[in-house]
Amino acid sequence: MSDRCFDRSAENRPGYPGWRVAVVCHLGVLTGFAAVFIYSFSFLIRPLQHDFGWNSEQIARAFSLAAISVAIFSPLVGKLFDRFDPRKLIAGFMTAFGLGIGSLAFLTPHLVQFYGTAVFIGVAGTGSYQLGYARIVAAWFERRLGAALSIVVAGSGVGSFFVPPVVQHLIAAYGWRSAYLVLAALPLFAGAPSTLLFARLPPMAPTADRVRRAGRGEATGTPWRQAIVTFNFWLLALGVCALSLSENGALAHLAPMLSDHGLRPGEVALTASLLGVSSLVGRFVLGSLLDYFEGSLIAMGSLLAAGAGMLLLAHARSFSVAALSAFIAGLGGGCELDLIPYMLRRYFGMRSFSTLYGLIYSSFATAGAVAPLIVGHVYDTNGSYTGIFNVFCAITLVSAFAMLALPAYRMALPKEQQDASPAVISDPALTPEKGATLESY
Image (cartoon, rainbow, N blue to C red):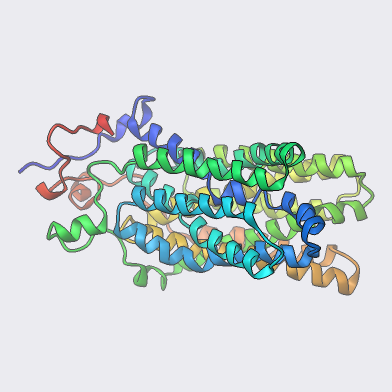
């Protein structure tokens, strides 16, 4: 029985099948929770106020419930992705998410129904954002992992341009109920089928369930219980939380903050757009740089750019300064979703990859949910955003230099360790079916 492993040099070729999988995963993220729900929700506020008489706080509470549900269930769903084929699980979650989005078209004036639907969308959406797709792509790539992940996570960035104008047009032309029926078609008829058909794991990368059934014990990598007590894990969590505090705190209050500084509504909108554009650029550029430089340096650069940019933005008194600040902040803030899976893959392997991703993402989401509340409370108390943003940005900048404490990792496994790699077939139970080749995936 002979061992067989990936020809990692093939990752540099456009015809490598992993790139096709990455594009399919990009489409999945584009049609999942991270794009469809998040970027459409604000357009639902006015219609619900008009039709049901709910106030802004009551409606916004549904968004918080959905976000909290994602934060709570991410580690649990991640554990499922580590254990079973993520492709099939994602397709199931995506179908449930689509049904949840479609059910918004049948809302009644009962808030309990609205909140229950929001929780359902959050739980189902947990399986439709980057969590599962990152695991699939991480199994395909070693040398070009950063570039591949940047393609996947850019799905939510593309959604920020694609979803809002589509939703706005649909609501204006057909009403909000019809708009959400159309939105439901994205995960139901694009995201779920494409994932099920094309987002396959490579034939050499077993799930924990396959490994166990083959009698080989556990998949390689660090168990999650051991990983979460390591210095590396908590340092990554610190960086992600710091970035989330400054980024989400600013995004939630960007318009009133800049308006208080004298910027006109059109300038505020353009500044927000620049922030989104630079965030998308940052995901591609910094994600690709991960393949050539140590992740600790990229993490430091990302946090420095985000912290410095947000700090400048909080003090901007003109459009030119605000635009430049937003572009710098977006470049740094756009890399967090690349960094999380990339660094977890390098430090802890694939054994508990999705479980650890879910835990880190929970901390990211929790910090992102708390930050706007803190900023709003401080503003209501002091009448200024500047002080609290100084604190958040200072935390981010300090965390940036803390990233230098992360140890170096191997970009690729040496020859003597390849037998322990998840990309190796050393058991007939894990071998592709007869006649299957890497190219067929």
